[in-house]
Length: 145
Image (spheres, one colour):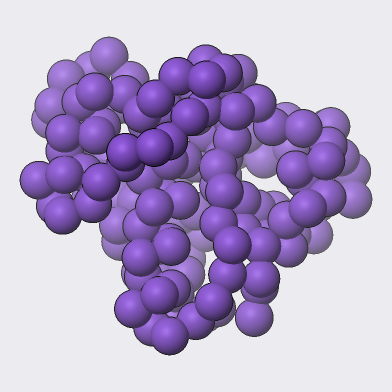
């Protein structure tokens, strides 16, 4: 069991916070314990979750309240037992800043062999699609954790 999980996207205001909160909820519902955090490779440091992302999450029963974006660091990479990223370039970035993260960094969509596109500034439909893909990917990971 992984005790420390980090989710990563670009700005840390849409996809990775949603993955963080969904992982936390699903792990708790499955009776599993892990600390889950999120970060971005180009984080909008200190910003809350994107308004549209938060609204879409809330319609599905998940609140992103209290989230504040943070930049990924070598310290966060080393803190995590498992790092889940949205796109291949995020994986490349993580392993560039910390080569030791190579064996523990995977696409969130690893089990479906899919990247999760960035919905930022693309409207509600793109955020709904991102939610669906992230939720499905989280469910796939929960069964493996």
